[in-house]
View 1: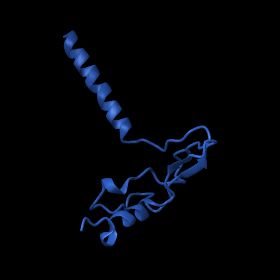
View 2: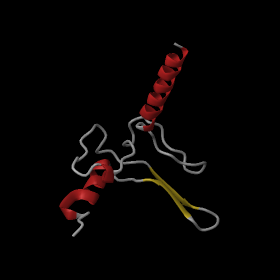
View 3: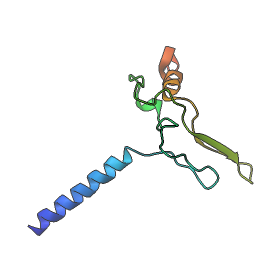
View 4: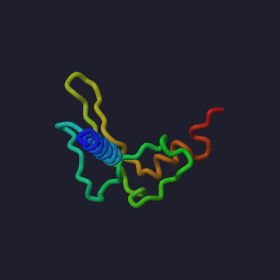
Amino acid sequence: MKSMFHLIAITALMGAQLAGAETNWYAGDERCRPPKDDGTYSAPYDAKEHPGDFPTFPGADKPGWFCSYQREDGVMVQYGNSMTPQQQWLAVWAAGANSMD
């Protein structure tokens, strides 16, 4: 019985972690603080993960959050992408933009 309880608890914990992994918001650092999830920006989106699925979800026409700066050692740091998910998808998949020919 105790083993069954542990198995159920571990399974529930793994499910919660997987569900949280799907809802990642923007990452940043002390100089580029990510925005709140208040509807101002689209959710983070990677067009390469959706080859045949043009984004039509709510917020797909909103810009993504973007922040960049140059560190003291000259390295450019960039977070996010200011294009909408629809613009990102078109840039990758429309009219053979990502053709393997």
